[in-house]
Image 1 (cartoon, helix red, strand yellow):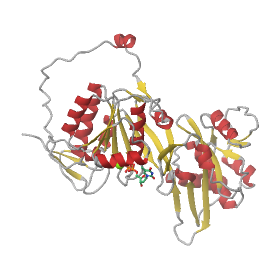
Image 2 (tube, rainbow, N blue to C red):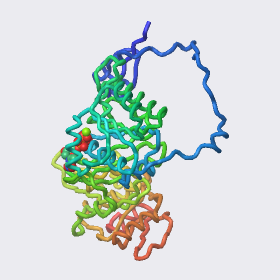
Image 3 (tube, rainbow, N blue to C red):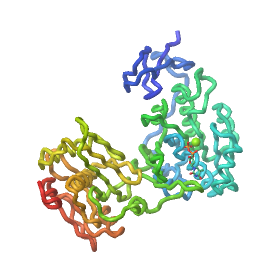
Image 4 (cartoon, helix red, strand yellow):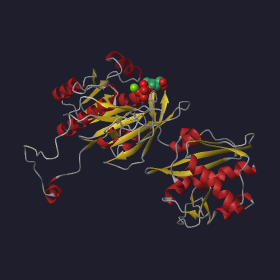
Length: 453
Ligand code: TYD
Ligand code: MG
């Protein structure tokens, strides 16, 4: 008898029985039956064909690193880890309307122009629509092959016949495999389509880029499973109101994760931003209380961003804590440390924290910059505008040095900053024209720069 299985459309966890609430992610009404998947072979059965193994030592001498091709969009090539690896499977996730199709059409055109045979398969738009977009982007002459198709079998047949080096599938949620008996976009369909495409990529030496839409809670709809199948997972993020878009590698078998590429959405498509720090700081005016520049590292590159805090007496019994671009539990921690170790209370005050430019920061080294912004807002004292801040705060109130101090300082100096505040244990690297000031704990930092503590 075929075994029935159920899976959650939010997190992809699978279960042997149905329930109203997913034990994996806690979502309600997301569990449905996986239809049409044959039950796997029983544990006892053995395969008919004997597999082949190769000694590791043999491989080491013969195999060279996988060949890579660059498309010339520097920000994309770098996020991929130095170009597109042959026979790799890549997932590009992001909110609907953020610019995934635009980015990939531009990338397709650039790859095709640099001699990589490229097919762009659209399951969402007709070929004429894709062509119109290409015209708008000034790429109508690029030698890209277009296909408007959603049937997986037809797509694989086309790829087999055309033998491209790169195939772009926009999007994985519109694909349907006819051996799976459920609607496109369901967990079973997305899983089957991603699996077949990934296997096809490996067998035939074709690189495949799949687009995946993200649901409102930040997961690619249903198919978290897709993340495990592919070699590289990139997220395209940005705030709707901002023109900046950030392509972030969250998994990469062929390069560093956490690398970012910065783009600007213009009337003529996405433009690369070569110097993101200059862009993120471009809207800064006079020094103002609550604004502090953080010298951060994103992937392999230093990026300066402005942290903005606003503190106001709260009319509510439970004061508000609102954060954009940073972790809210980390903010709670910093407020607690400021209160416990420096005697600076935030009770009865609403606290708002914003990372300017629509950037998302996850580095612990931003702690000190956040604390500085909070103190500056609370005390109504502006830090000198030519100063950058970085360092991690521990629960004891001690400051821990951040990695890559030298890169942070050099970037700050390059952008015209003349002073940096860093944890006491940081390596002293003389950077011409930059005055490095150190504090070993938070209380000392507060005393020195805000005259309290
Ligand atoms: P799109 O690539 O269709 O998003 P996704 O594939 O992620 O759903 O991008 C759509 C948005 O981008 C749309 O709101 C309009 C904007 N856009 C520009 O601002 N300039 C352009 O040149 C293009 C093509 C799109
Ligand atoms: Mg799209």
